[in-house]
Image (cartoon, rainbow, N blue to C red; front, side, top):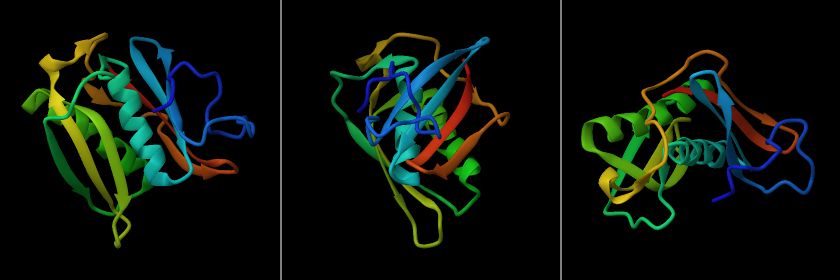
Length: 156
């Protein structure tokens, strides 16, 4: 997992020294903006999930207690980004679970298979406001010259 305090994102301004994958959070008025990047769409989506978790919880020493598998139907890339983050919010609000690790894989139909290694929220140190919703405004997930990048705003 990459440090979320890096200065560069996976967009056109990234240089060759940037890590292959990572994420960061950017202050945004009353919300949090998450930027992530990866060599593939799936890696970028996984980093976005880890970035959202990192904005409210320190999971560095937590061990997973279960693995939750979610399959998202084929959809536009931006929709898959939002659906992935919505799943984290759902798990948090309904089950009190927080991902400590995530793996994503493309399905044959263009959808996404997500495996969330989760633990109870009570087992991690909460460091910020928990996310309430993902904003549909100014969502970005697309390939670029250095791989895939995404950006999304999360309401806290």
